Image (tube, rainbow, N blue to C red; front, side):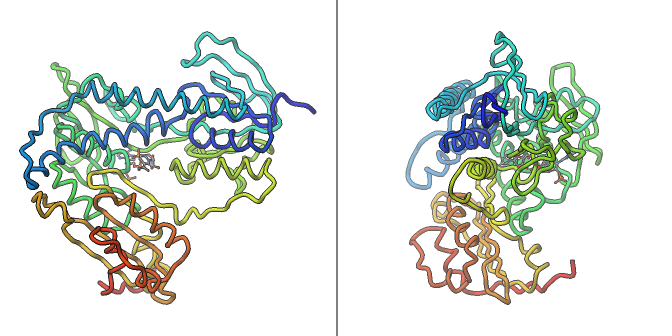
Length: 466
Ligand code: NDP
């Protein structure tokens, strides 16, 4: 059989673009279809605009802190319109870069919504990005589904008044009051953004601490940092209904009886795979109840020749993981050298609150399931905060498997935590021992040096029964 393409990638997000470019570099005839944004969620409605907005939200603190260093600057106000326009210009530039990268790699671009008609045939229909394109039909030897995920909002009365992160990046004006629901990555990050830009913020989540799954000490430190930033936390609470008021504002009713008056209700309650309209059910591609496409270790779905990578497989929904999966798949299908292997378990994570937090490897509780654990914790006031007078403290923590003395987890809440953690992730992935960390000289004066100077064990956590 001869097909139009060796590989057809649906979705030009981080994973899809990497897969297409690498496959093309191996000599494959590759096409990509994109219905909405070149660059996908990360570039358009995720990591990139989020980080720009986190940076924007930090400037007020920098002005306040400068007073302790002899400056007489005044805080002023953030111009939301100017920020959004500047952010959109940068995103448009990145969209162009994505398109030109694909074109330079000789990847054929299809703007439109792709539906898989059978294991080798796709139909491309007009989409919002290209409403006037005529429908087309193409064939491919192999198909990769890289369509990502979309926000999930729970069903409750008045939820139609709520926004998700998709809308938050394009609000016409910054709401004076924001009520965020969800204590995960997006809830915490946007609480920090809006608070830093000057909004009054309520953060509602159903656990006792934010960021379920992260290390307990880090979660406690984040809880305190959220308080310190002047964000009202409503813990162990869930919304039951949202009411719209006559003046256009809203009331969020919680299951503990609290009523929160606000100008914007923002749900950050998780994301689900974006599988609608792809034709997967007719094709027999197996999915879990939540829409997650089931794949094997080689990213192949239950239909031979059809693959899935990134958030749509709901393995570890992080951009660099989607990129690694896309790269690995392209190498395996078309490359000559064995594909790069990587370790899901030591994928570093970061949450861009102010201050940032970042982790790699096991939490103390996870490590204790394997054996006795040596725990090293350091809490200190970072140097900048001595003169600025800011009360925020930094937390650093190492989790060491007692029997082997391998450092199995590193955790930090403090300025530049993700920048520091990237290097530490190499050490944790390489399974270096605490003695290797100890014989490494620090860089002085930095906060990071604390990770190689923690000599006194804080506690031993015995192996847990669980
Ligand atoms: P998360 O899964 O991180 O958090 C979802 C939050 O919503 C949790 O607090 C969860 O509570 C809560 N929740 C879920 N359903 C309900 C409900 N019905 N009622 C009340 N609360 C509910 O999802 P996000 O939306 O924050 O982010 C989606 C994903 O995007 C992340 O998991 C991450 O993979 C990725 N991401 C990564 C970022 C980064 O790397 N910095 C930044 C942003 C997103 P509970 O814990 O009790 O389940």
